Image (cartoon, rainbow, N blue to C red; front, side, top):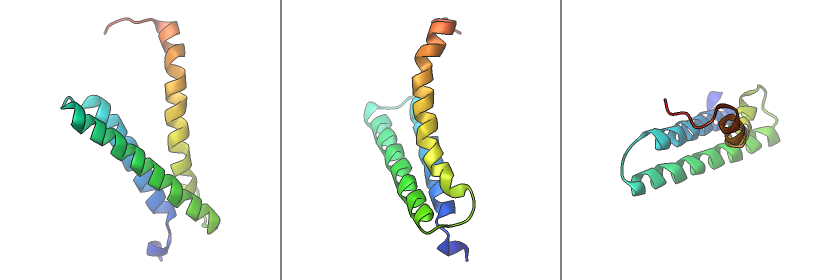
Length: 94
């Protein structure tokens, strides 16, 4: 029964993509490795979105199918809020 549900797959793949994206900013390695992680994370997030749309089309129950759509929205919201936070708090070094 679970193998027919793609809503869990879309959520797991998009969360894995988000994790890889965050790790690409925290790992200090070669530039090629970081670029590979970044584009892999974008690929995972894109695949999660496709699976999420398939789950919506198949009218699967539950809210997991929407979590893959929320991940790119949260990333864009975070990127959009960075200038606001920089203006409010400045460029103070820790």
